[in-house]
Length: 316
Image 1 (cartoon, rainbow, N blue to C red):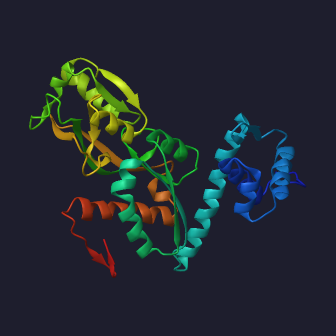
Image 2: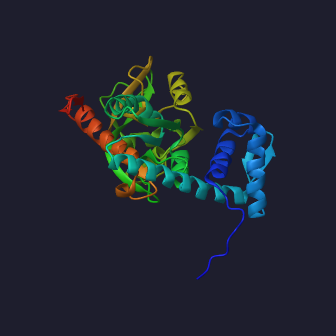
Image 3: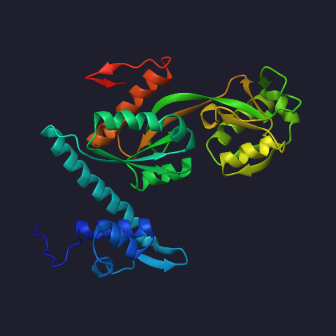
């Protein structure tokens, strides 16, 4: 079958410019990041829209944002650029060069407890691989993976829409003011919480986990009086006696004045892992290396009493 020759074909540069402009929501800032003129950015996107016959971006109060069709095009464009990056990495790996870039999504508990250590060791072993971190909520990370904004992301389960690897379990703890009537106990029985109407939660998979466990044991749903989007806000409210909360241990700072942290009975745990939109066997060499090192770091540092192993002069 003969393929009709097209005089104008979209280019990788056009896709890169489109992605960068939408990410930064600004023509001039995108131009500076790409080391080209603002006019070049504008013309590139205009030419792409003309070729496709539809608007891809529009202006709003907060800057540039994609149209409905633009969102679909961006998803495909990011996948194309990711595949190009993977080709370069695989070629480099075949000749013994460990280079490239990996984009990683992370949420607060992971960013505080795991990510700095993992990144430090990763840079020691792979100094020529660039790591780009995207911090957000668990829902944002899943959406970034699905839309190819990032290569892999730390997530909590359940996560049925993505390929996943379990890394570690995290104990859920009862967090309450020191003056609370339950604070003198050694642990908190979940059934006791039916008498505590001032519970607080925040936007995360944890509330799904807590609600399911709470209902299975008590037949009732948790009496959440407040819902917040920030852990620091939640802890400040508890400190001021405005409520109590069930929170994951890794999300908690080492010391919180005037606050008591107690285990739950029966125990409740959340599962933390890494997710990808493609099978882990098909990840780029850089992303695959990051996943493997993350597994080793958690196994040898968190799960083995802080004992490292040494491999080829690199500490794990």
